[in-house]
Image (cartoon, rainbow, N blue to C red; front, side, top):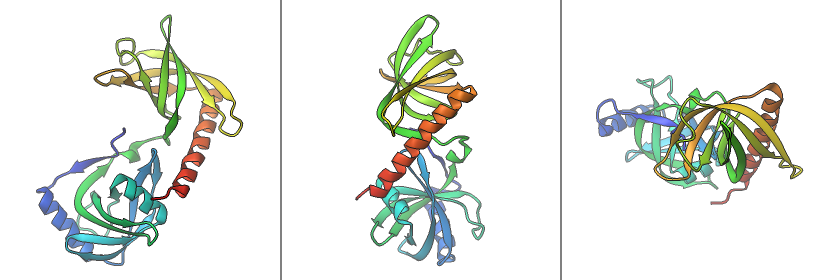
Length: 237
């Protein structure tokens, strides 16, 4: 799964945590921008700092944010102009109450949010999305794990048939969530990397879609986004 951030250590982890806590103590009542991910969809709402005590910070958060913090057991916090540093932050969830919209965060550290570099919205799939991958004269089967307009992560049975930099043709079998029908969409792609110790291996590809293919992929992704957001709303913890 995509690593959303890089942890940064400026002094020691303990020293960094204390510096962040000191800045938080001076900012009670301030609103901060939280960031989490639910099935690759960003969930980001403002959170108000209520109190800092015993090296823990209590925030009033949006209920969707509280749900995802409960699932991820952590949250990213964007840098704030009032702070003495400009790095983003990460904290661990000590306690979350979705009904009361409260989250107590501890063990703070500095972070660089990498997911901001994404050009496209990515969605995680609950059900396998079958694809045919045409490599030279072979037609190989794969299963899409996540997809965006820019590319996909696909489970494949072998590594040697997908060298990095190779151009391949892919036939996506995209379901129409509203009607249940299947649309076959052809797209050219470049293999970025293949990783894993055992089959199935994870093959990351970059799409080079034509206009019609791009529209069909976009339509499917939008449908999947609506599905994920509905699932988050209905999530009970």
